[in-house]
Length: 116
Image 1: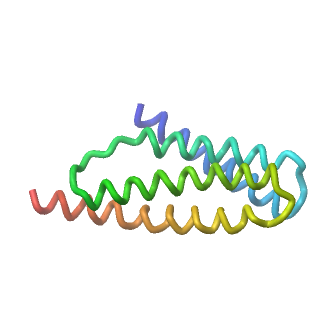
Image 2: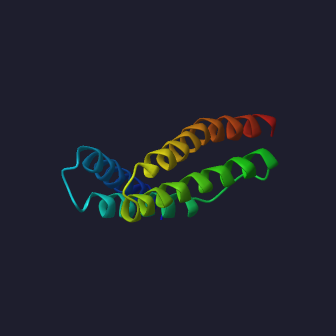
C-alpha cells in the first residue's frame, strides 16, 4: 500500500506540473484537466498517508498539508472555470503550504522520536 501511495503521488505530481506548464505556455487546451487530475492524485496520496504521531504540532501541520492539497485541486477548478489568472494566486498559496509542511513535518517527527 505504501508503494501505491508513493506511485500515486509521483504520477500526480508529474501530471500537475505538466498541466501547469502547458497552461502557462498556452500549448494545450486540455492542460487544466491534466493539472486537475494530477492535483487530485496528489491530494488523495497526501490524505491517505497515515499520521504516526500524536503531538498537537504534527496534527496541525498535517491539517495544513491537507489544506494545501485541497488548494491544489481548487487551483484546477480556477483553471477550468475562470478566464483570468486567479489560479496563479491559489497555486502560490498551495505551494507555500506544501513547501512549509514538507520541511516541518520531518523535523517534528525526528524531534518526537528523539524524545522517546
